[in-house]
Image 1 (cartoon, helix red, strand yellow):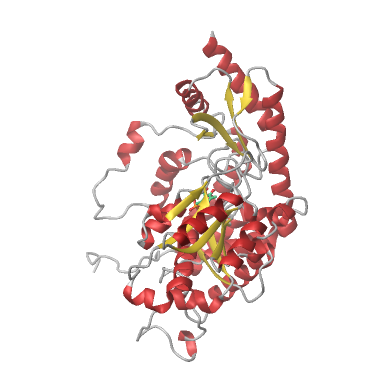
Image 2 (spheres, rainbow, N blue to C red):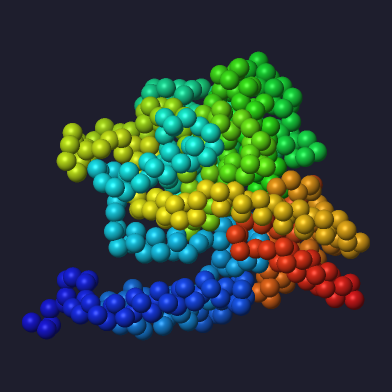
Length: 475
Ligand SMILES: Cc1ncc(COP(=O)(O)O)c(C=O)c1O
């Protein structure tokens, strides 16, 4: 009897699991409470990398030992975006309520692809809140996804459906020369989406930007006219609300007006910028987003929900359904558990989906929308302070304007190699994690203030450390 392998994964004695689970919870709460005391990031030693080159284990191991291994080999070597001095890329800091929600969602293990259960209802609530946040109508449809890359992809597919109708789903492009427009500051995932849709990246016309890195509206008009004259079909304009390099917000109202006049789909990529709608001071800068046909944004960025939690909103609910729904024999029924259509699996590409909505719903419910407006304001105030410190310094210079929460700067006279090395040094010392970007052909240090834990003193400390490393380098 004892030789037969157990074929259930539940423990015989739940009390041991309970003790281990409580310990994990205590340790993770200590981890969040003590984030400032640790490094932002640590390089993984070779032996830790090697620990993850093991063959498939035939037999299981003791759970407490496994947790020791997590504590030694996993917890210390994660990205570091929970740390207040992580300023790289556009990473949210997460929050304690979302951490607990992840535990609850894990225990529920709901499949939110469809069926009539509360996971779908919670997701619809979250989508309605998101539409309210950006000022879209209550009838707006949407779905949670991994991130804005997928949300932009879903929006491109909806725009393509508007242009080609159901025929386009059956027969593909059918020789239509569809073209789209976005500013040259567009995130890489937008040309990526055109590639995945089968249009190719050259179908995206990248419109030059003005001195504030916003799309040149006159150039957009000219490009559309030139394309129509050359026999192309303009089908999509992407306005960016918060470009990834510098945080510029396109003139969304002007783009909305052009899109309406030209009968072109207007999509707003507001991956992090959408949250600025919750700041009464910043909201006017996003005027026009409420007129978008679709909006992509992330809860895992400025909304501080743990990864991953992207969202697409689509004004025309019927069109979103028509873009993705597929006839199936076995999925849906009129009532019972298989009722409750439309299902999320018919609003995007995923069939099986986790209970992402729970951590979003718990985060927004626990802290309230006003808290996120205040976090956005604080992030922008820190970025302005950092930009002022840079401008006031004789050794540093701004590489671009800092209109929102992103500051790109350099040590004067540093070439690209020295700038790159300085950022690597900051990261490897575990002190700060800014990233880099290229502005006007030259590398710049890029600090994006997204994490709710970052304070003014962290920006000051970054300036001091950059100046110290620069002085050391200059000898
Ligand atoms: C403007 C913009 N769009 C799209 C994305 C892609 O978002 P995700 O990384 O969630 O896929 C980002 C990421 O930083 C972004 O800043």
